[in-house]
Image (cartoon, rainbow, N blue to C red; front, side, top):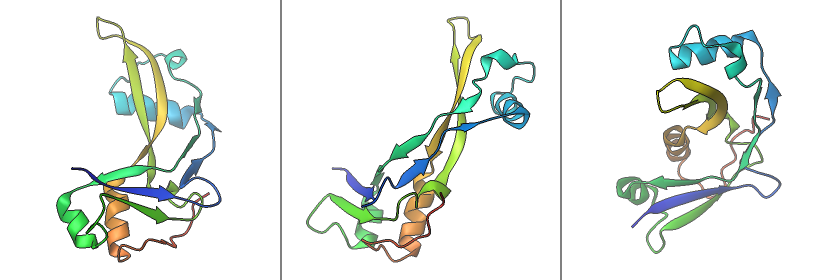
Length: 136
């Protein structure tokens, strides 16, 4: 059985990060993340796609028990302000490779740190209406 929390916002998405352009710092960061200092710049996409979602985060039985919110259900909905989970997102680079292992393309995506979200939710007292500040 899975125990999960769905983070919803009544006026938008719990995570709402706009598409943005990138420059040399991004190129350097991609090369560092992939440990490929000579990666050709043309293999690094020049933007970071937007991310909009209301994530569902699976938690452990121990976390479910500690919250006191799962006694008669396996899913709980937590209301948050629009963009409130943006602070828990970071950029991650994904590399596409050919069968020989050579990088053929890279893209950068937003990744939600689910562990940090759950820790912060626990620290706030497991509220069903979580009033954390939005990071838009």
